[in-house]
Amino acid sequence: MNPHRAAVFDMDGLLFDTEAVGRWAWSEALAEVGLAMGDALYAKMVGKDMAARERVLLRHFGNAFPFEAVMRRRLAIGDAREQAGGLTPKPGALALVAALADSRVPLALATGTVRERALRRLRDSGIDRFDVIVTSEEVAAGKPAPDIFLEAARRLGLLPAECLAFEDSPAGVAAAAHAGMTVLMVPDLEPPEAESRTLAHTVAPDLAALLPLIQLAFGLRLPAL
Image 1 (cartoon, rainbow, N blue to C red):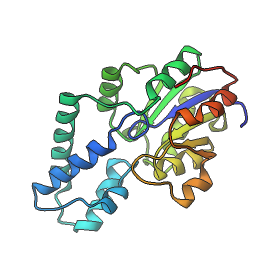
Image 2: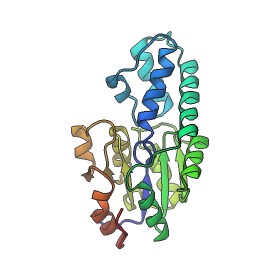
Image 3: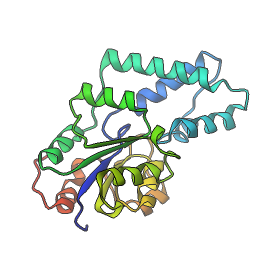
């Protein structure tokens, strides 16, 4: 593990347990128009931006699928559940972000979630410690394209190779790796694909298992997660 100067985090499925809520919200919204969301279909959308999700759903349900209307219902349903029940952080996520920020490691967030929702989630959870936040609406192409990670590095004023990326999805791993970052993967809903295992430096069951590598990458002694 070479020395690194910054950490770049995905959000959904890595910092927060939002993918399960997202899948439920999509299922509810699709049920309202008489359609169903299976596990295989949702897996094709994990980690990708709305444009990519639209393409997946149109291919699956046909060009007459009312994506805009269903998406609005999915967001309303999901947001209502989040705001009523709060967000569940992934194990070790809050502690890791806080420890790196306290150690003055520059932090970036690279998320497919729109900025307004990302900021609310960070604020409500108390981990709004990021120096840079890049969302998919701010780049030409979302994950698995590398654009969002390249832009995060640019805003940090660093080379991608100087950044350690944290991801949970195959699309995110591919995006960060093709941007030139070292990627640590903690899979969420789906087991890692063969490609993800090839592109990621390490695949681990949780963030705590990555702590020795993180300490080595930044030359730090961090508290247990």
